[in-house]
Length: 253
Image (tube, rainbow, N blue to C red; front, top):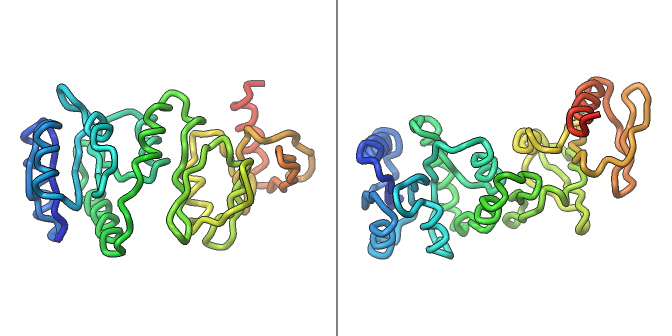
């Protein structure tokens, strides 16, 4: 069983979430319901939960205040939020589970299933380091870090340090300014979706490039780009118009 604590300053929200968990997530047992940061800290000390459902916006101290006070977090957290797109981006880049209000039961089940898998594998809870950092960069998303999973865990990388990504079947190879390439266990499509609305652009079925690192575009049927590490990558004919539109939009020429 997964021991869980729910923290939300709205009684109705707590009751609704508890009921959804009873109906759709039988593996979860709610051991405490809290309405502020102080009571949550006490209940964490008493119950040592596996999972905390944490509302962000609360009177007085917020969920992020609790996160800062806790330091190391030896349990999983699913954030409950109604915040802006930049806030969602911070969660996604940090590989942190979050749910938007009102909570959708299917998304709740999916989030709990991911938690359950991590707990069963005895993996350490997802690091909060990236989230803490990214929350300080909400208005400058290009300065955020992304949590990239690989065979031994995950690495945290500044977006600006990624030159390009290359598809390798169901894996993705990252080429960085800071060191040798490394392979992630996720597909390039996953990263294309994760990095949408940033400086990244899919130029070919095999390549996702960071436009900050484009030095030159060479004309051709699709053309090619030369990047800051002097790699020259093909732009597919199908992606050419989209790529040139993104460049024009990004650099405002």
